[in-house]
Amino acid sequence: MPDYSILIEKYSDFEKYLKGRPEMEHKIAILTKGKYTSKVIKGLSAEFKDRLEIAQIPSSQKLLVEAFNVDKFPAMYSIYNKDGEVGGFKVKYDGKMSIRAMIKFCEEFALKEKVEPTEIKPHLARDLMVNLTKLNFEQETFYDEKVVLVHIHKGEKNHDLL
Image (tube, rainbow, N blue to C red):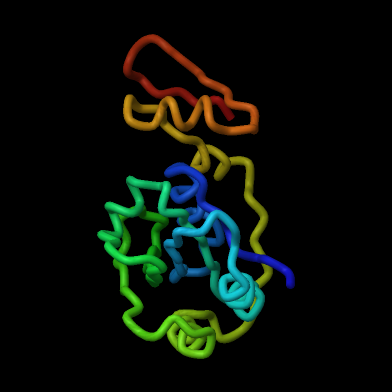
């Protein structure tokens, strides 16, 4: 079964997820205990491909588990995030964790018609950059298989890299 869900492996992935696909004002986050993507999540992601983005957030992502105030797994939320804000409005799904019930919940937030992904324009690439802080430095620089560019500059004035 194809999987179109997005795995959130660190907090910056979540930020990028919210900023990505701006044509979709609502997104779905499913917080799980499992390490692998379940058939239910794969099914939801296939059902709503190009209509609603589905993200899987493992319970190991403590900051996000706390932000969503999750006390029981799995947990599903719809996130309204018109401007790509991390603290967007959330609606918790309180129904049965069956594929049919979850589809019904997701249908409320999905686009009516499929929309092809928009291409990221170079001037928007800076929105995908991550500002390193004491809280996220170790996770962002040491636990990723991707190339990490750290730009350190003196002074408080921002300047463009792109």
